[in-house]
Image (tube, rainbow, N blue to C red; front, side, top):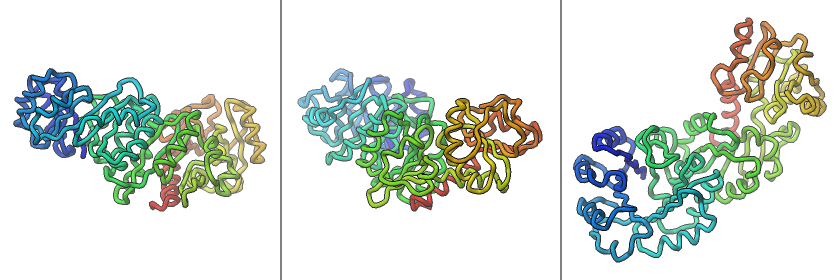
Amino acid sequence: MICVSLPGPAETDLLRQMEESQGWADLFEFRCDLYPDIVSRVVPHCHLPKIFTCHHESFDTIRHLANLNPEYMDLDQSIPLAFQEELPSSIKIIRSIHFFHDTPKDLQAVFHSLTTHPAHLYKIATFAKSTLDSLRLLCFSQSIELPLSVVAMGELGQCSRILGPSIGAPIVYASPNAAETTASGQISAKELKSIYSMQKNQKLYGLIGDPVFQSYGHIYHNDYMKDKGAIYVRLRIKSEELEEFFSLARQMGFAGLSVTIPHKEAVIPFLDEIDHNSAAIGAVNTITCRNGAYVGSNTDAAASIDALGIPVKDKMVVVIGAGGASRAIVYEAKRRGARVVIVNRHYERAKRLSEKFGCTALKPEDLGQYDILINATPNPMPIDPHYVHPNITAMDISIAPDTDILQLARERGGTAIQGREMFERQAKAQAREWGQA
């Protein structure tokens, strides 16, 4: 169930928030600590089931609110059982505990303390300092048989809200819109329901990288996954977190992963197998779980050169960058007969990569004439504009709609190809790898 948590604080705000969420919410949460005096005036206008969340109110206030007959009351762990037993038996009790600054390591101990009081549902809310905190919370929830909702607050906790239904959370908390929230990291109910399939027991897929929030892969992949019992989520993972991430991913049963910067090379030691192309390239952008094994492949290579829309045989192709994406582009361009030059801000890195693939490394000032320029860095203008020659074909693999280097190439009579062309080709190939096409 999607529960829209109503921030209010004024009566008119609550009425408006309920109205705009009506089509997306399954129930509403009234945060009675924020506006206890106006709840009674608003409840008659509420046509969905209600949760009254009472954490710091006086017992008299909670008794008064209980007389309004909400379907649920959320009581903090600290509220005595004797007081809970005074409440009408028709009200279902949620017992909750909140950690506003971190996610405790011993979640079993937290749950044990929470369940000392009987309740219809339980809720653990923590603050995620990393995506790993969110995944630990989700993994723990999977191991619990009692009805338990887990929420990781903060930007790095958003995946816990998206994946909650998949791992059996009875309630997922959302906001009425992106601007009005009751906790950091909340996602609007409209976004949750319009993008993601909020169902139990779905196949899990995701994007790992740092950063990831600029990606629209979750839009692309969830569009076709919604009817296939699958869900795709963005996961910001730091380089030093990869080992623990893969342990958690295996526990949770992730069926496939997309890999973006800076992890395309770094993930290889954590995989059980990589295919021939990935081994030759030395970079992986796709991970597929096959018979319990994580297998790496690369859909960037073919997608990058196909996106150009022209043959590259005997053409001079300049690739800017020396990371995982560059490796795939250089490999495929060479395989198709192009003459490849690698340019990178650190010349020695470009030279090492050129030696691996049997091509040339140059500094920008040494560039002669060339036919095709591919920017495989996050920088929208990674070289001096002087070296963007007239009448070339330029492609930027960034999904930004029109980067500086593309605008300049177009102004100088060239053809500009946006990164979306490459992205959609490689994403479609990923879907085939995962058996989701």
